[in-house]
Length: 405
Image (cartoon, rainbow, N blue to C red; front, side, top):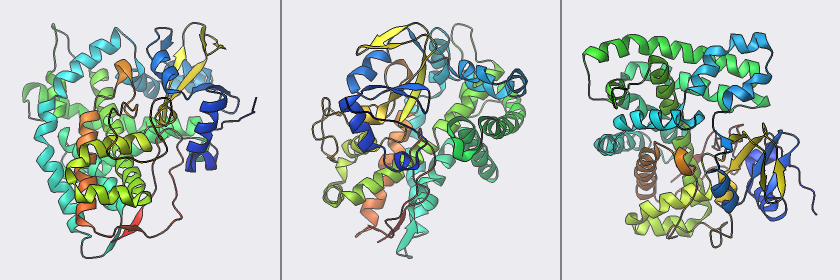
């Protein structure tokens, strides 16, 4: 048997994890990572099966943080409690209740109502660089767009949005950073500081919205009620942070990774340029090909066996969606970009009960922005092959993407 070592913090792995995913899926699909102390599942069928297993829990952040010294656990209790109150980090029945309440606010009507605003924002950002003939796609479009969209949906005024973005970035460091962004205690400290500042910002706003509702997502979450049940203040703030955090960097990465993939497959870009109606299937294929969220973890709450490997109670299990999305058992020619691919049941938005609540919004932002770039910027090309990736093995995205046209 081939010996393969997986270290999620290795710079080469972060830069291009797919060759290693291919090796693991072929030779060691249920892989114990000594470097990271977790099980990594890379086959589509295993991820789809185990993610629905009741012996695997999403309520893991408190358990993962339990190995911190008691003093540190007390110091970071606000941050640990906040993350633990996320829908993403909860199991039924708590998850069912939270998701049901937030779903009442995050409606298809609300997403559809913001379509014209997204188009307006994209057009304005591209207008600003149209005469230059070159721009950094990340800083000019992919990075600011989703932050402005989710901030406006939550009713945050324009003058507060830069601070809002910084809070989100800091919380991302607290959750998804690695050794290159500081020790775990340092990352938690950064995330907690911004979470507390964000909570202080929202408190008076929420109090006002209780008596004076407005037509925005935050107000709808404040008013959301089911069978006499409402979100507590802690749940409200925590899940606002989740929507803000999950709705920003992931969509930034969809746009950046998507345009890079098209640049690497110019025949596919030309196909989309000639037929803009392909953008719906194209966005699904771009999500599959280079997934913005590479993986997420769960906790085994009982002993389980997967493909002959015994996973002990208390072990962390990481579902590698990006590897599953390149599984040849599920996708024909998985390492090829095919914008006309059909039956594309990718896992870029996770799978099962924790399927991404904001998937429709991310899709809409990706479709509008990617199509606009392709249609408005002929002869689009990379300015440099020396691309730098953000130092996260979870959220895969570029620091910059310099292009000319």
